[in-house]
Amino acid sequence: MMGGSKERARERREKRLQEISLLRTIPYSDHQRWWSKETIAVVTGSNRGIGFEIARQLATHGLTVVLTSRDECVGQEATRVLQEGGLDVAFHQLDILDPSSIQLFVDWIRQTYEGIHVLVNNAGVNFNVGSDNSVESAHMVVATNYYGTKNIIKAMIPLIRPSAAAARIVNVSSRLGRLNGRRNRIEDLNLRRKLGDLDTLTEELIDRTVATFLQQVDDGTWTSGGWPQTFTDYSVSKLAVNAYTRLMAKTLSNRPEGEKIYVNCYCPGWVKTAMTGWAGNVSVEEGADTGVWLALLPDQAVTGKFFAERREVSF
Ligand SMILES: NC(=O)c1ccc[n+]([C@@H]2O[C@H](COP(=O)([O-])OP(=O)(O)OC[C@H]3O[C@@H](n4cnc5c(N)ncnc54)[C@H](OP(=O)(O)O)[C@@H]3O)[C@@H](O)[C@H]2O)c1
Image 1 (spheres, helix red, strand yellow):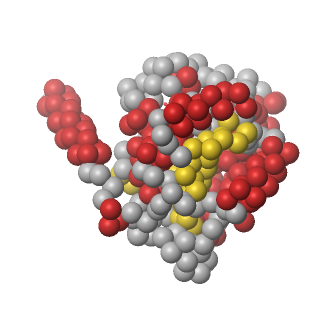
Image 2 (tube, rainbow, N blue to C red):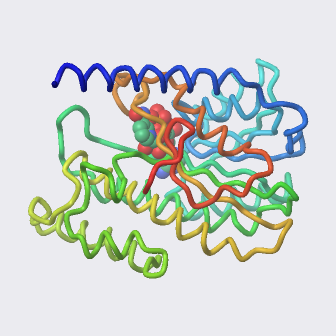
């Protein structure tokens, strides 16, 4: 019995891998291309890893990309690599936790490009590997992954330029932050329901949820708090990103035609980057793929969704 179901699972996995590689071979055809060199895309934390690859792929598709990094020298070096490959990439320093860095960035974007069309929130941290589950860095993880992402979205929305094809915000998140996944869930059913229901979901509820977790980290009670069990701090931070993605999609859906902004999030898979100690089973090219696809989707109103390998998944 077991052998049979394993075999079927393996076949399903292989079929899906074939589908994905087919999807990747289909080029972004000219008639669907809503962007040009005048289309400005900002990618946070793009000096390395998935962010660098997203910047590279977007620029390869012909957008002008603003590569950002909290470390000026490292970011300039990464930008030079892409420029030497003939791509339209500019650099500006951006630390998503530093209000003065964000303000300088906003001012520079306004002066240089007047605004942007695509924002990819990729910058993030995780301090656990393998079976570790330390919450020593929980405050930093939640601050960067959730509040940092929120900071940038709030700072950049006023800079988003009107576009017939709609502007795009893509948040690089994780399956570990799924509210209703089979594993690694918040145990409190009532909280799950409230976070999962767009009628009860508020920014205040998301903030309160992460604050409760951090409070329990501080007073040492978090292990019995019913939080996700794998990389708990990281999972809580990405759960908050996912919930905020849905909330923003709803909030922004009232914008008039021509000023629409679609907001989605995705999981890149387990990717070979510094974050995983170069473990993982997915290359950066594959890890970036769904994010680039979401950023460039042709004229379709896809918003408030969570994707993995170009497939919509429930939150
Ligand atoms: N790798 C995976 O398996 C995996 C799985 C699911 C989701 N993700 C998500 O994918 C995204 C990219 O991760 P990665 O795997 O490419 O890891 P990575 O190589 O460690 O890259 C993370 C990037 O975020 C930047 N960053 C961190 N804090 C920042 C801050 N305060 N301001 C600006 N930039 C900051 C880093 O800058 P520095 O170089 O200065 O540190 C780096 O450029 C993250 O959001 C991560 O959570 C990764």
